[in-house]
Amino acid sequence: MKKQKQILEGSQAIALTVKNINPAVVSAYPITPQTHIVEDLAKIKADGEASYEYVRAESEFAAASIVLGASATGVRVYSATSSQGLLLMTEVLFNIAGMRLPVVMTCANRSVSAPINIWNDQSDVMSIRDAGWVQLFAANHQEAVDSHILAYKIAEKLKLPVMVNVDGFILTHSYEPVVIPEAALIKKYLSDYRPETGTYLDPEKPVTLGAFFTPEYYLETREALHNDLLKSLAIIKKEYRVWQKISGIKNGGRATIDNGLVEYYGPKKPATILIALGSVAGTILETIKNNQLAGKVGLLKIKVYRPFPSEEIIKIIGRVKNIAVIEKAISLGQAGPLYGDLKTALNANLSGRLNIKNYIVGLGGRDVTEKMLADIIKDVPRKNKIIKFRGKI
Amino acid sequence: MKKNAKKIKLITEAGTSLANKTGPWRTHRPETDYEVCIGCSLCSKICPEGCIEMVSCPERGGKLKPATDYDYCKGCALCVRECPVKAIKMKKDY
Image (cartoon, rainbow over all chains, first blue to last red; front, side, top):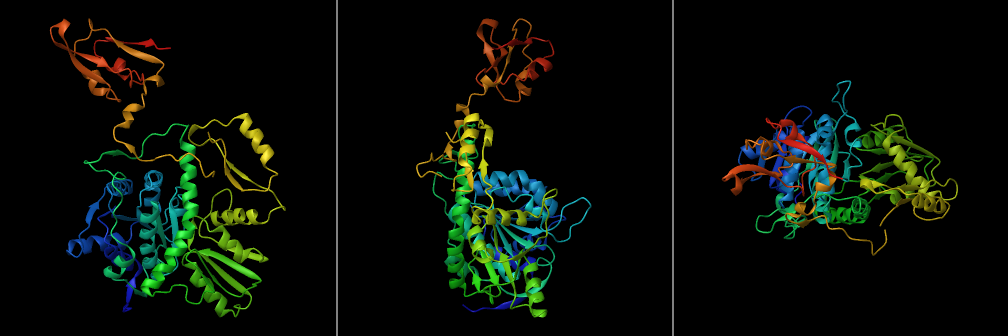
């Protein structure tokens, strides 16, 4: 493939990539905190360079609902948002995941109010990390471009929505050399989206989507979604390699581990590891280099945050003494969300030292009975899975 | 998860929401006194469940009267509140 590098703004690079991915419907709300992504997509459409339906919504809630509805009719869709906009979409995002619709959306990560502030951090996405979406984080423009192509592949293969997170301003408003894969190349990897008949809304073959589930069934559907998310880790890894092969684009240039889920830069046995999501990884690498710490300090960049790649992370940090989790979000009243996730992953690994298990009970109105609790008490000392769904009928 | 765990289908046949009868959720049922009712159809228009239908009553010379579908009426009593002639009363349903 001819690798034509262009100097592009992050938002423009994403818009051009989405155009080449060729969705059928794009919907967004065009006011702050929005990015140039949807502005560029609107211009591309107005200039007659794309065939997608562009629906300008009256709010982010509506934009998310429009892509939900469009996706339910069995077509490829796209939206982008940020900050308060993402929060306004929250209810719909949970519905999209629960209905297993392969929606792909970009989140330009920015802080949330109050106080009013729309600069970069990752507070927005952390508020919906439990919605059931695959969460990808890009650290530079090229990664953002490739992540969107990967996102559609995973979404459509697994019937899971995927959010591509790019740091607001740092990536969305900055210029970098980047390769935009041509539509024909993308099509080689990502064939046209054709869901099976009977899985989408069609007047010829009507179905019910997003139906009502009583307490007898709800918990199992949540466990199924959870398990499918965990299973997607292996597929993300595989599809990442396939795209690298087809495109010839390699993101983790100097990384010693680069598997699509995480990237690791540094010595085999570092004294200290820094862990981060998104663009700050680049700054960390520069810091290590500029302070001549390459022999002692490593960087673990997490590219897939949900599902959480616990195994890959433990392999790298399991025996490291000093670990710093660098986060642009805080779960107020507790700790950084990534910090909590890492402790969970580490606890699963350090069996014997401290036994903390997690039992998921009572979802969707399922009764939590004395018998269930007595069984849990018996189960705690056993050496088995850390996270369990209890009370299944 | 057990391998043979129950696989629940998220996509179902069309029109299955009718299979979930929501009537048993109510504790009180609205009953309309056709002697008092003037057939204005306001109850049918404001019913949030859309389960009051105006039907023609042959024994009343074909006049339209509201028929409540108790399979789906949740007993919210909005019809009672809005009826201009107070023809609808809530009765114990348990």
